[in-house]
Image (cartoon, rainbow, N blue to C red; front, top):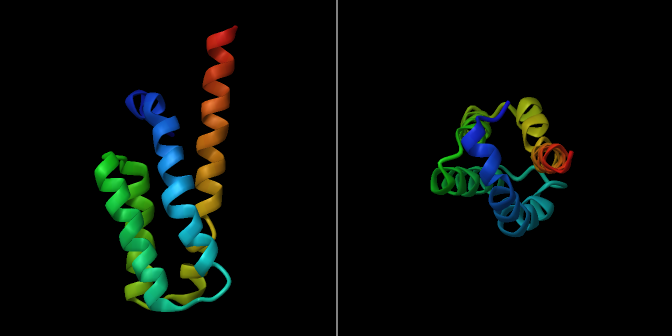
Length: 102
């Protein structure tokens, strides 16, 4: 799912997602307040652009588009994928590290 160049940067990406964006996600996840979700989507997009991480750019664009079109059901599903993204990155890091050890 990730290109090789991204795999090498996953620890840095995970750190930014966990430290900068996860606290914001945790504040908004229980209440579907549209402007807060839009703000979160903008912050995810900004981080994705800074990291030049296409996979996260795609997620941010999807979140932003759903917020703009007020697709509440889809927006809720997409929003709650954020922790899964961090988990997937963590799993990929662990799998990569295990292959280095072997």
